[in-house]
Amino acid sequence: MKLNSKSILAVVLLTLGLLLLLLMLVLAEKLLSIWHYLQQAPVWFWLLYALAIMIVALLPLWMWFKWTRPKNQSEKKPKIIDEAGLQQALETAQSRGIDITSAQQELDELQRRRQNKRFYICLFGGASSGKSSFIQALIPTAHTEIDVIKGTTLEVLRYQHENLEVTDLPGFDAIEQDHLSRLALAESRRAHVVIFMLSGDFSRSEMMFFESLKDWHKPMVIALNKSDRYQLEELQQIKQAIADKTEHKYPVVAISTGGFDTVIRKQPDGRQLTETITRQPDIAPLIRAVKRVIAEDSESLHRFRDAGMLMLAERTLTEATAEHNKLAAMRTIERHSRRAMVGAMASIAPGSDIIIQGAIGSQMVKELCQIYKVPIKQLQVDEILRAAGSKLKTSTSMVLAVAGNAFKSFPGLGTAAGGLLHAVAYGLIFNALGRAVLTTINETGRLDSEQTKQIFEDNLLGSSDKMAKNLAQMALAVKAKKSSQNSD
Image 1 (cartoon, rainbow, N blue to C red):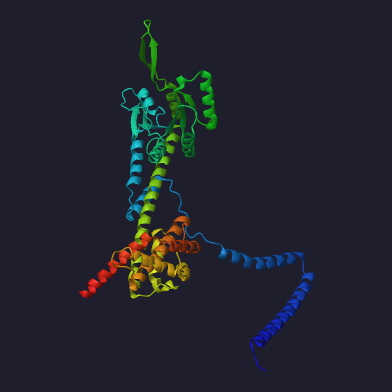
Image 2 (spheres, helix red, strand yellow):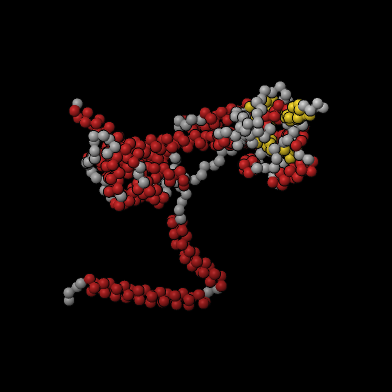
């Protein structure tokens, strides 16, 4: 009998069927035997036996869940909430070459404010809301510029009054809005109490910034300025509307920071005279409200101020660290892309297997993870490199086309071929891979293989002409250097 594939398959299926039948018979015999013994056993044995069966049945499920569940390899670092921990973090960052100047300045400023033992008050509000006028009414000898033009106060000004140090902040809707808004928010976090100046009910932008301050649980007093321009009933309605919008959590006081009114008087002889009448300021309700807030719990105010400044210092350090890591990562990507280009000068076309340059790619991924202190395993690196190689199967022609077009921008060179073309192509590949790893780490805090593969493909298909031109220029420089060395 001549054997073929169908005959072999039939024999295999028949054998499997017989084995399965034998297994069922043996299993049935064992089950009947167990059932016979269980009928004679006490109840407690039944329960113990049932528990053992459940454990054995659930154990494989638990092991499967544990092995297949995604692990967060990069656990979030505990938040720094104490000064000693922050100082240690600054020293560690400095040893890595991170610029800690701004963060250290925050700590130095905290020490300065602790030593003078003043209470820091900051004026917060829109441009021309009356902040500078309030300062002049509080401290008549203070030299401040007061102008009806929106956005006149463009710098932080500090004034001392008794045991208070008052900071006049730029209006958050002034010129250079984004920069000044960040400046105002940061300074408010350094203060004990915020005075939120209004000239009427909350506007949309004022409400938005009020919510930002409220999220920090900063003690506030809301001052309704220009109250002398309202009738008593109208003034009460506005105060009630403000209190409702702030959920009655903050005192609302009506004040007037003074100013000037122009009055035209008609003389008996028919002539008209223009007079300027000074409106007397009335800021006493605001001063009393601020002092009440301070007197209620001054120690808590100091702790909240300290915590706010420590958080500012920590945020500044975090931003400096992120910038340092980003620059280090980009230098790493550029260095390994250059190495890959040099290795590709042997005119080997970038095919579907990136393992040709695997050592360089593996080292690049490991260094990027090391910069961000992300745990990594060699299996992950190998998986990413294999996935990157598979993506190149459908993208090689496109990458070579982009590389070829890059050389056309160099007059007299035309389209490069051979090693130069392949070098630029490999430069594009490694640049796309490095940026994919960097993006994944920044977004997830870990090395996610699947996300890295997707981003790598997007980066590769979206390779910019500018990047290709830069790599082409680098390839030409490398070739020129090698030619010079060979001629010597």
